[in-house]
Image: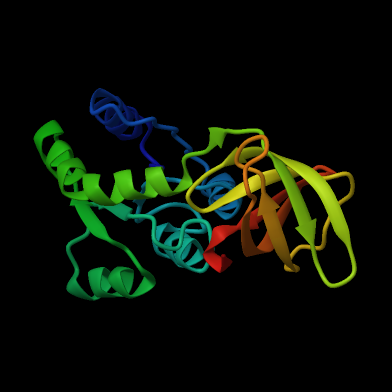
Length: 202
């Protein structure tokens, strides 16, 4: 996300050349909405943007469950020590100082590649369909998985569950195999029937 379209385009081109999937958002209010609802492997922010600025967006990222540990890179021409300290306190991971060139940007990508790949693996979803039994203190549902990741699974249920509810899950790995049992927490609903259960609580 960058307030200068040419620089934004340049950063996107370099990141794409490094085999990263890139999306550019030049409206900071729209960026704030996306950050609160979608998972990103890394976020590039301009420090000086219309409200919310880069520091405020970083605060929002760090207060959001989805992107709490996502690397945040601030792109800026500022060199004031106090401003940089304020940004680090908000949760900024790295600074990329203007003028930005390809070598500098690729060097930063190399440094952050481990964190980016780790986040990508944690949230990568694989399409897997398995039978699932979901139970809580007063209910039992027969459902099926739609996809799974290292962080959770999206489950299609005949009726919605309550976000925040603790449930017991039994997944049938294959026909006739003993089910895999674990505890989970419902973290979000998709439409009227999709339920994502966080594996952080398994």
